[in-house]
Image: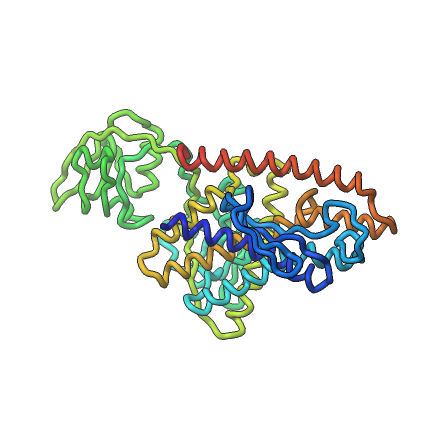
Length: 429
């Protein structure tokens, strides 16, 4: 059921995109031959006016077919025979609809539960954030000179810099200050005992809050409330020191000395290697705030700008090799993420909030990605129209078809790769 809801939500985003093309085409007098939900063989077709509305077999996506869009037509109502401005409006309408729907979704969410601000929540003592001089209530402004508009900007820049020491600019009252933030690295291959700490930093970080089922810690009798004081007779005062020692010792048995009800107990535990993405811990958390009407209407615009900027950054990082293609999420992983958001939401209210939030993010990403100047994307088609405007005459149909076909082949190849990568990441990631 959760997966079905996620698939429907993802398809709704794509349908909204195609609806933009359809509405502007109709308003411009262009003949719309077909509006199809999904792809593949037709299951059901209904003709209304001059347009066929069809339902197809494979429940992914949607498309609009315009007269004169892919073939030569002499009709004055053909897309190919309309002025450049009209063509551009029809092409841009898809991404614009994505942006407008995302703004609507975000306004609803921000009115109901507030939004993630750049104001810092509680800063734990001994954390990298504390060592950088950050305090609760500070507002993060920049990360290594790049402006921070929302928390995801902070985490993206930290990840792309591989957690290297970075200059953080922040505001405290009327003061603008700087600090050097050095995140704690949890490597991809790390050795664990299998417990969660009572606190992330400080003395409480050596106190066991819970023990993971099936972990080495559970097998050897570590229990909630135990306080780890040394490993192989070497004193430890924080979870960071425990992790560093285990990663150095690796999978060799370790003598864990702990305090339990005031008594000193020794356990021999063999750490287990855990694989996962590298994690950079800072002790930073951001406040969720609810403000007045104006700010609630303004914040969705800031969120959208930030997300569009992230799409552009990501494209650049892909070209420069800072981000691998295997890190891109395709439709399979997107559906999985949306499904998890539904399954982890205990009430219908939270299901709606989470779906609106994720749908807004994906809708903006789809709109922004489609505007990239790549053949077969809306942005590529707009680029061709710009070239035609500069030349004062259209490209030959053969040349435009060749460009579109090359772009389509590249996009289809990338799409197949991303889908297979999604499956691999979900099974073995």
